[in-house]
Image (tube, rainbow over all chains, first blue to last red; front, top):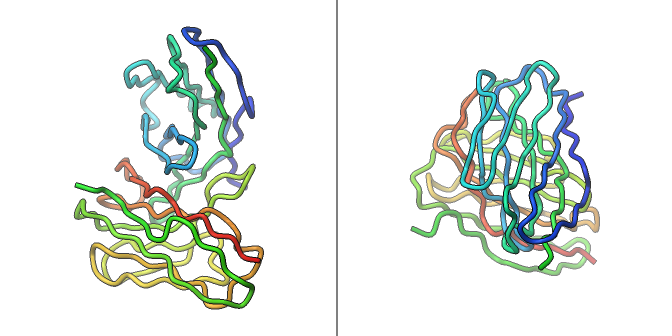
Length: 113
Length: 116
């Protein structure tokens, strides 16, 4: 069964600190992996998209890594800001005739001053 | 450029009532999607429209119908609402929803629906 598991479920860090969020997936056949940021009460917003051949991709202070062999990805946030408080969702795209996306439940990050 | 817009933002229904959720995008995207988001779960696809004139079922289509009115608009209808349909509904779109696409999906702000 295609699944995307994220850890931790929630995380609290102090402003200025770094953190790493984890994503494990069992989606097959794999097409690409995405990270989204979802602010409370808003729709998800894309941060990165990585294909099978890409190991890392950055978007400002966000850096995503992908290990397609172990089916793991991580999202590293550097020098966190209060505005980073949000849910971060890992999404894996499966091949299947259309752009089929399997969503993780997300990690809820709170950045405190 | 408003992106993806959804109406209404909030709605409360009684069991058995019907309603239509509206979605529009102004990015000239071909593919549009309806998802629902429940607490502790990932977004689940209800229906999608790969291109104007086509619609297909997603993971959880029971109790819903859709209409791709034109390239811009994609509506979701609940014919007889049930408490199990209490959720947050998101519309999304991307340029091409074909297999293996790396196109970004853009999401609307969501509709928060409560069925009593």
